[in-house]
Image (cartoon, rainbow, N blue to C red; front, top):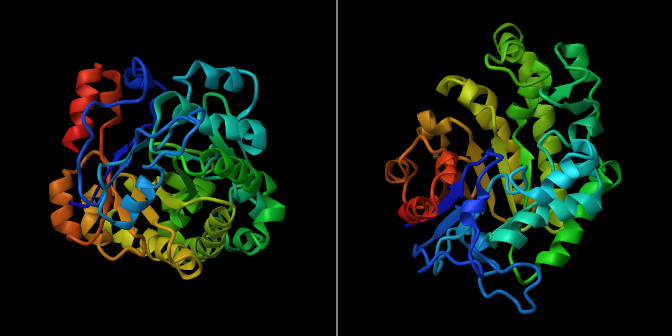
Length: 357
């Protein structure tokens, strides 16, 4: 079995259900061959010795034989932790994510407390956009808001390129270097990017909403503009992901967070080719670094993901892993797919659900 257990959580809630009474433990190890999870039980930073399972998540993402299934949370840093709230109550999001000392601390908090099998950099999928000429801010009660939504060919033509991420986004590299020092030999370090369509959709729409109206309007009335925008992003996001690897990330996840707005045919036209282009850039430069692709809500067209350029496919909780494996084939490692609401339940229920995956 090639499976990655992933808790697809955006919940600001009950990681406390994972809190061990003494040291991180889930009882008997969860056994799986070639398995991966998005929530893992590793060794906290203050442990003075190396963790023999430190690269478990990396190996699982590559589809290698593993002694147990690694586990991590897609959103490990969050308001469910009092230590996190000390920062979120006092600093705006972009200050937190773009100040390396703070971003490093927030990235490590969950791992130190619960011993996950990986640390994911505290950042946002929109982080590289200002370097390309698309500014945003995070407004309380609204979330990220784009200040200058690009909605025509002239707007797309004005966009700049992410030619030197180290100079244009210096805080990203510094944060990853800090994290690599803290995690080396102890756990795996994950970087991440937004997939091109998702970044284009968010930018055009201006903010998150239920119907994605402005984006779908462009897809319908000006598809060539949407294609040009996605293509521009594909090249730049591919290079941005490479930069993260060169600064220390050992795994890269591509988040197609707005895939649930797409029909199967729209996915094939507007999302898939540009995600594949960006991931191909990564694999050409860093063939040994595993790439995970996650299409939120994409379980309804999983058959369209059988030839993604990624090394593995992450599943949402709306699909059965066994059924997904039949669709994707035996050679594609998968990750997923625990319903985040399980984290509101008792510890016994959480343990049972993780083991069942």
